[in-house]
Length: 276
Ligand code: KIV
Ligand code: NA
View 1 (tube, rainbow, N blue to C red):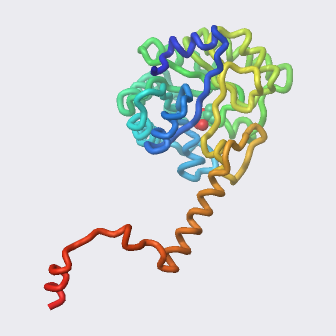
View 2 (cartoon, rainbow, N blue to C red; view 1 turned 45 degrees about the vertical axis):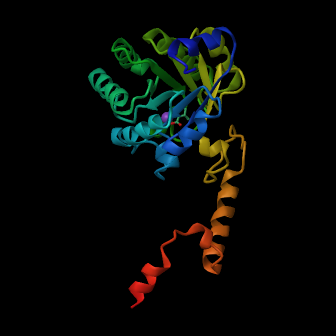
View 3 (spheres, rainbow, N blue to C red; view 1 turned 135 degrees about the vertical axis):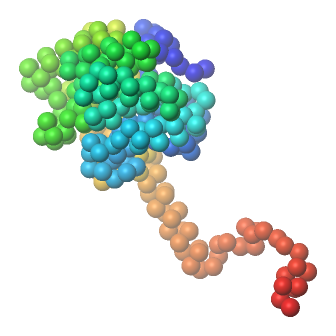
């Protein structure tokens, strides 16, 4: 049965952990759907994983719609969240509502996610008021990489930790039904998870959150440019893929693939006629 905002929030009450993975395309969405995970995130991390940018800042609304719609076409049964890209909501409450609406209308997703706490309270409230469920995202928010001076754990000092806790209260009060906690100390994430009524989804946030999200290429071992500390490889799909590419290369070059079994037939007579 497909999850809803209500069923996901109930999972927190009954202490059932929520599983979420990123996804950016149709065929992977088909595979994820058969796995039993609770939610898919079409993350703006597609800028890194699918498009090869060093960060998420270049990702556009068109990119998110293109990939979001492909994922939704692959899903009947999973709750799909699409990220709002950099500068699609920071500029004004109006822009935030218009762009959240575009993501919902043009992809068919179930909710949108945006980064920030106190600074985007008004945006979260306005989008929620428009009937669009919002997932918030606080802690290390990659769209602020230039302000942070790098992808660094946030919330280690007392002042930072207090600010992140306040951000958590702020996004909940503004109407977010869920919040992603990225790269914050485990004990801070656990405290926030305890204090909030809405579910927390951790990534690099320890074991005390209400759920977990990972970038699928990271957890499959497909993305080796950089492996963050919090990533666990649940498979070595990258190695499997390289081996398969090598085998294919060798067989094509050796003439052992394709064989007759892979070809299509035509009546011999026709070929004989063409030879004349
Ligand atoms: O874009 C993304 O993949 C994300 C997750 C890491 C939370 O925002
Ligand atoms: Na993101």
